[in-house]
Length: 88
Ligand code: SF4
Image 1 (cartoon, rainbow, N blue to C red):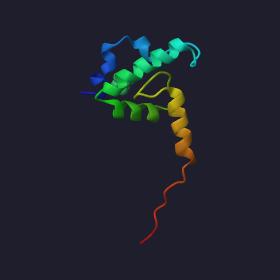
Image 2 (image 1 turned 30 degrees about the vertical axis):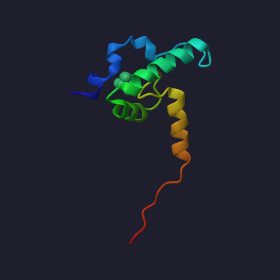
Image 3 (image 1 turned 180 degrees about the vertical axis):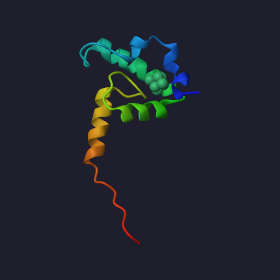
């Protein structure tokens, strides 16, 4: 069984995960919080978030994060110094 088949969002209105409008508007904030609330209870949040990071920019709430939040996380990760292996 694919992880997507276990997502709690399958039981919700798909539009909930794709808020439309100004990200600072009250309705978008409320809708985003409701979508994240579903993700917090979802048994496949980690797989979903890993997928969203792997595919690159993708609109909507996936794995409990908005695309803006994932973009910020990508930028933070890119700024982190790379871990280098040293010869023993
Ligand atoms: S983490 Fe959220 S978007 Fe991902 S499968 Fe679960 S409910 Fe759906």
